[in-house]
Image 1 (cartoon, rainbow, N blue to C red):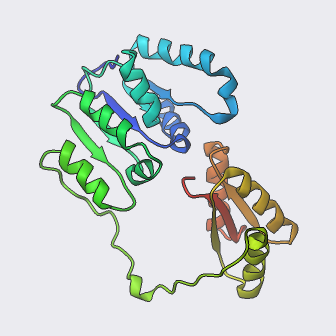
Image 2: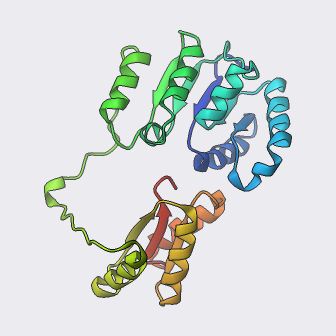
Image 3: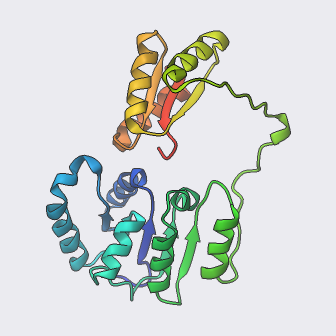
Length: 239
């Protein structure tokens, strides 16, 4: 159940965002944030984690933050009672749709009170985002935080490489162009770790970003890129 109806809030976000939001709640001092989600590294303890989540929700809280699947599951089982909810927010809505959570998002929104504030944050406004907003928002205001880059000034280039040669191609391109900074995306966390290790072994100053990192380590990695201590960042696309 949610307490303090005037400020009660529910948010859905990818797993990598949950720890940051919960840490922010602790810094406020008087806001109880319950994190609803699983980490693959502790999946063996899912039953124990589920009991902890249910107990925290039963006590009542001001904010619930969770992945779409877990929030929808708790709502279906009646563990999460949304009657007092005043605000719902979807962070990285475009990524959640790309990951196949459309049904979960729609189920969450359909179960919520009609009188609520619905917020959606998205790096891109795709037709699917617009359709979701049109269905579940009323008189919505669109806010563009930053102007879009002029795509005409961006040069897109591609290199065709066999799967076994991709890492070598990346290393060769970095050595050839010697960029001041570079961002490399990998599909899996294991690929991030492996490629970062290979680049480091070649003498490149590299940091890695993935869901395995805590918020402190993520902040340290980004700070290293900002101040030039690292030149290459290898990351998953949702990190």
